[in-house]
Amino acid sequence: MNRSPLDELRRRKALVEAGGGEDRIAGQHQRNKYTARERLDLLLDPGSFNEIGAFIQTRGQDFGMADRDVPADAVVTGHGKINGRPVYVFSQDFTTMGGSLGEMHAQKICRIMDLALQNGCPFVGINDSGGARIQEGIDALNGYGEIFRRNTAASGVIPQISVIAGPCAGGASYSPALTDLVLMVEGSARLFITGPAVIKSVTGEDVDAGELGGAAAHARKSGVAHLTYPDEDSLFADLRWLLTLLPANNREMPPRVEGRAPALEASRLASGMPRSHSKGYDMEQMILALIDEGTYLPIQSDFATNAIVGFGRLNGRVVGLVANQPRFLAGCLDIDSSDKIARHVRFCDAFNIPLITLVDTPGYLPGINQEHGGIIRHGAKVLYAYSEANVPKISVVLRKAYGGAYLAMSSRSLGADIALAWPTAEIAVMGPEGACNVVFRREINAAEDPEATRSEKIQQYRDKFANPYAAAARGYIDAVIDPTRTREELDSALEALASKRRDTGLRTEKPHGNIPL
Ligand code: HXC
Image (tube, rainbow, N blue to C red; front, side):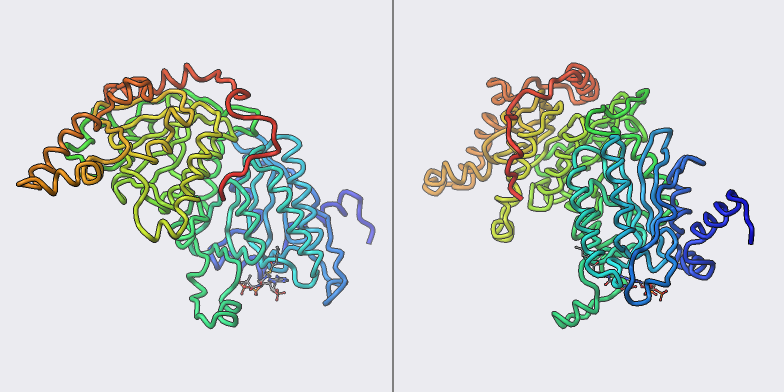
């Protein structure tokens, strides 16, 4: 048949765009999943997608691969725009050989990653794949290695976002793990190293295939998922907004917009603090009274709930938020919350996002599980991350800031640029009860009325140390502020620190430090 060159191009394009064909696309929709190309339509500005490598073919020869047509080698790659800003993307096509990753499939992803890195643009990967293409053996395996190396090279240079919208099994799960944010769809996403059959054969354990590697498990237990969504529509809509909070690369500032009043009134900052020292309260309410309405994005909100990390805007500027959450474990730092905080601090530091730290913590969580689980190793990550970060760092002690946890939560000692405290702040080496039991033990035991003496000593300690003024007297706190004016104080501090030189401070010439991992 004699087709014009343009008709031939159209014919070939239509074949590629048909992916695995009507039946498999219908199967994809039946599972509440969009196709690879439908996902790109949801993610990108209309008409902005430019495909790269549409005609790439597998070079596999074994197990019937030689005669097989694998449209686009089961992955759609290219660049497009999100709110007018360029991004590079791949979207795996589960309808074609289960989105499995062969040699050329991996090469396509690597090409996109190289372009994203060279041009300083965010990189978004949409994962829906049966993993390494079994028919392509070691070439598929090598493909993953090439991707991991590029994920690592791009880390801290361009934002890398992984969407998990179907299976992402075996070694495939390590590419998302190397990226900045992992977004999962409830119900369809499955992220795991070894599947139920392998677990059963090695350990004898019966694992519910429906539960293994799902969004809920990774959001609550493993901490692998940063954000989860009930469906793909809400995920892609949120991802488009999320990228407005990030710079395109580490040489740019996050885009600033017009400021907005907070969702909650400033009076909430004072009225939200309970009179009793030992009563919990919701730190999220404080955050909502500080940042611009509609800009709060908590990250890992169901994991290590005793700490809060996230993003927001304050008077239009993007800020990284870190806070203790006194509603859970009294806001203690433990193993998981230390990991959560340290990683967020490094994310913000990599991408020029000033850090605001809200402190109310009685200390590191005591207990043998924590000690033997490595609280020393994990807690040290927070110290390292804050010490190393040289974006503007502002801290506010709302109430408790005791011991190592005081130091860890962006103290002046670790290099906070501005350290503020509320009049309700208690800053000391340890809490009054613990301190008096150690220092005055003999005196209390020998007293006629030990309980009365204990209470008296605790009150004396509280009067002397459990306030912000001892710390302020030595310059560890720069200012004790009216809680209802915290937003204004933070805004002024952000303004004053906006031109902070990032090439000064503790950094010296070295390949990299040795963060306790
Ligand atoms: C080749 C694959 C494939 C793979 C799926 N397919 N996975 N082809 N290599 N890894 C093909 C199937 O043969 C099938 O083709 C089509 O994709 C759809 O798969 P189904 O099994 O029919 O779909 P479903 O029932 O939804 O199950 C999806 C699945 C399952 C859970 C992903 O396919 C599966 O378990 N696949 C293998 C997962 C795996 O173990 N991967 C290797 C991990 S090891 P037809 O033509 O029949 O429709 C790994 C090493 C990397 O990735 C290490 C890097 C460090």
